Length: 227
Image (cartoon, rainbow, N blue to C red):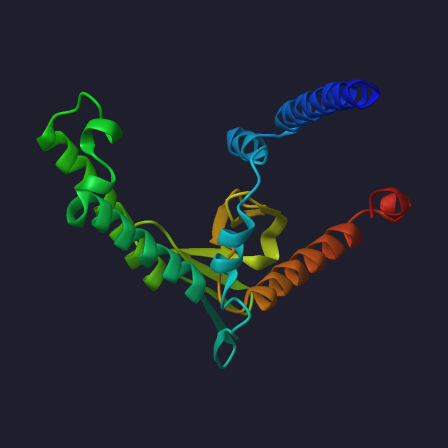
């Protein structure tokens, strides 16, 4: 009898503890979203409510310890092999369940009420987007040459940034660094690249140098408070 009562009390305590933990997590996310500035930061703050899969994160990072490609003063960082393998695996899975073994994901269950022709176009679109993602990540590079940073956009165009104007570095939940510059430009850089640590050190060194330079520009009477 006593054991049953203790088990019931323990179950009630665990239920209340679980709901209290979840409510606290939701309130923490709401507070984080409220404090974030800008739509991008608010969306990122909301996404942090759902933690990344540690296994997927480990796979994406595989190969990020490989050294960056060097040419005189230029350092080039490319997409980590683990991320490329993950994209290839996703393409294989999409093709497999869409066209090779459609019985694994019947259209009537995945796309209820949608016509067959429309479903085929949806599947082709998903596969096409995955293939584009692979091509993009194979060709995308981050280059640092002295104080010049060069990245590639979604249409493979080059974007140029001056690291002497770097003012802020932040890491998005989905795995991209966001660099903000005093001239209003913003660079978004994939986290999962070869030579990752070297790239981050270069950004942090540029940011520290810019902050020190900004601090020195203050009048001596303000340096203790501002610098």
